[in-house]
Length: 473
Image (tube, rainbow, N blue to C red; front, side, top):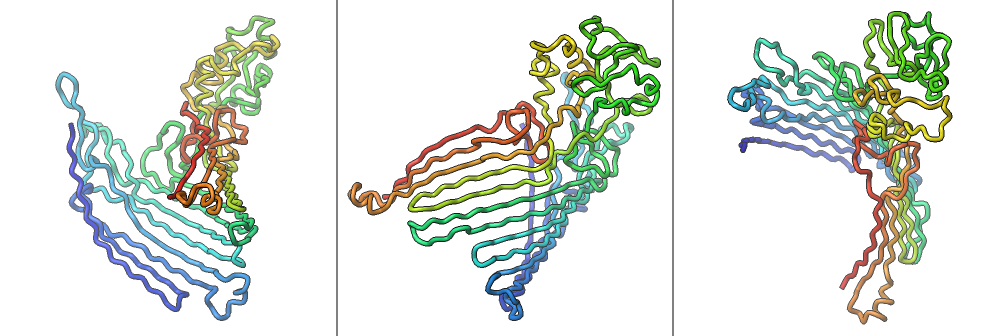
């Protein structure tokens, strides 16, 4: 069993100022207290200041007939997040059979992770048919709470400290267009909505030793969405300096990887010369014949490299809405341009000799590979022990995310055939996740989270169809 006690207090003051319907200023100040911090940092001040200017209300505005509304606004805010319950306390683990192992050294001097955000935007209306909004934001997080290793003499593993900083910025755009407007129930109306955004997040300060967090590399200057791992050589120019004089003993095979073949051999001769399973000795090194090579640094250590980025160039959504004589037809397309996916499921299948690409049936003998080519420690799937560049795939996609057809039965029809007891009836057919256009080899390109688009055996989104009838009495 466990018991925790958290306490928080907040005092808020706000001020709103408006002048002539054109100028608006809002200020907010709050003082927050939380028991999750030590005695010296329990109280902290936060606030927000925003202002807007409705330009179209000025008498000198020359395009009032075409643009009845034009507004610019900006805001700056400061907020904070709280640490975990136990971060200010020393923690230990009980050992089975008796005894205690120290774990985390408490920190009663923790401060909030401070977020400072600036936002600027413009929105406008054009001839009562087009509404547009463009927003830019820049967000800085200082004093990120990160576990830091502590000297072994203290008897603890880590301590939570305010040591990191990150920066995120982005642009968001929204446009609504009333393409066809015909008032009344029987009129034909068509409107579309388009929204798109581009974001980027990066570590600006780390103040501790860098480390690997799965496929992510946590270090000063790296992006929060970057994919880090290992790379197989794809060109003879990538051979390390000590192997370049022996470049004639390596070749690029049909899968695009540099493989060791030895003097006088070709990568297509594995079956005809019984070379699979043999070793090639080159410059004090031993290499499995026909196997790919991992990229290494000058000391011979396998390099940890940036092999991709989960962050797309842009995400978008496009809505269409058509209405005519009681019918309403709605569709939603979503998708992204750029960004990549790590196909962890495919790597697992290849490493366990279950993937389609290891099926040698129907291949010419010159193209066949041995099982270890795929699943040994330096093979294509690296025995599922490494993040490999060859399992990073393009994440572009367009998806028919939703469509709906509704029909509202006329009241005159209901009055004639329902005897007046039913005041309203609506019939609807809905479909979700109907189809995806993508080059991704997995089941669904919409996987993982924006920060970690890793296809790790999760069920894909279901395709669903529903029908419903709504009655109003």
